[in-house]
Amino acid sequence: MATRESMDTLLQQCEDAIRFAQEQFESGRTQEHFNDLEYSNALQSLEAAYNDITQMAHSANSQQREQLHRMRLQLQQLQNQMIILPH
Image 1 (spheres, rainbow, N blue to C red):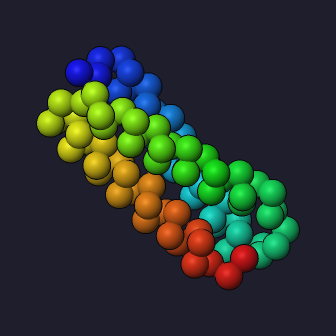
Image 2: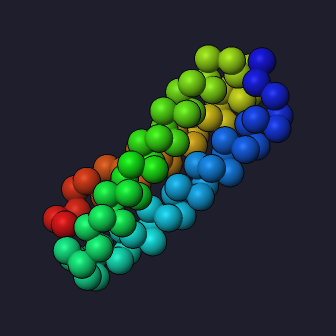
Image 3: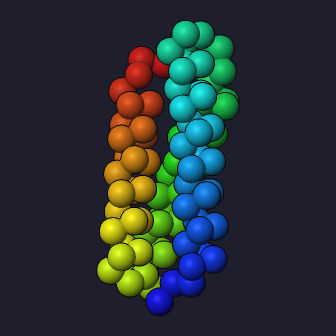
């Protein structure tokens, strides 16, 4: 079973990745190709967070897996929006 501290740390990292990616997404929508490197970094941080969630889910209990699943959906949704954006 995953510890509460490790879950909290992972979820905080995911929220940070989402916040950074949302900032880059908004910036990308308005400035188009101005910040390509940061935009790519944001996508990479979302992917890393997604992979960390997948790893954590193996040792999580059912309640924790549900929490991780919801976070995974948020990450995927933002990732998809960023990929689709003509940048």
